[in-house]
Amino acid sequence: MQSPLFEPSNLPSLPQQSFFEQWVFQSPLLLSVIILAVGFFAYMLLRNSKHSKKIGIPSLGVASAIAGGVFALGSFITTDREQLQTRSQELVVATANADQSALTQLLDDRASIKTAFGSADSKDKILSLVASRAAPTIQSATIREIRVGVYGDQVARTQIKIRVAGEMVPSNSWWQVDWTRPDTETEMWVVTDIEPLWIQGMTNPAGNR
Image 1: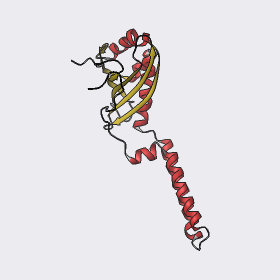
Image 2 (image 1 turned 60 degrees about the vertical axis):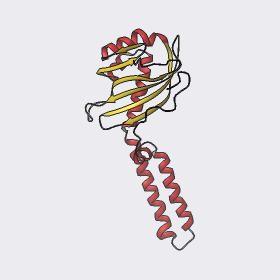
Image 3 (image 1 turned 120 degrees about the vertical axis):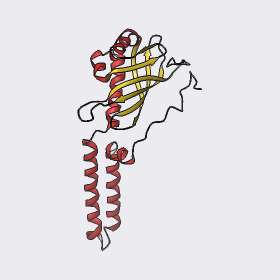
Image 4 (image 1 turned 90 degrees about the horizontal axis):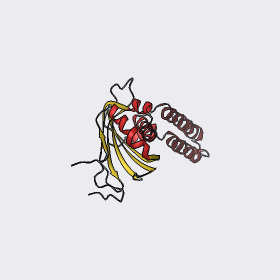
């Protein structure tokens, strides 16, 4: 059983990204630097040998070309995980500010939210709940961490750690958000379900019976 006072260390697991996605698409600069360093190291080892022109210089050239390609590829391609990170940030900001326009773009028509202090089962009801209950009590919301799990081209989940300042609201919480993308070519990720995993000071934040 989770403690209502201490942040949980055993949140539900999420699918992990592949090595290729992590290093090529999300950390292209670091990988490019490593490749360049390997090429330069090889060149330094061979520069005074008889193989310098045959192996050393070409190795440096190949490493430079690969590093440039990796960096360009990673810079120009936005992965689903990166999109979901951005959409999660937008969701928190829109909720804290009661931004009806932004929330409309982020929520599926049949989106639902279930908490001990208010639930809703449609986009319109969530908009009303945010405007009437959530936003008036929130002075500011800071995102401390976002975890992303992608289950396929159209299904994903994020876990968001938030610190909130305001009147009569818990300061720290973890939220789980389910996402869908109806059309992978033209549609953005939209929220289908929101549920608190942990809210500081509350024993049953989701209101489960």
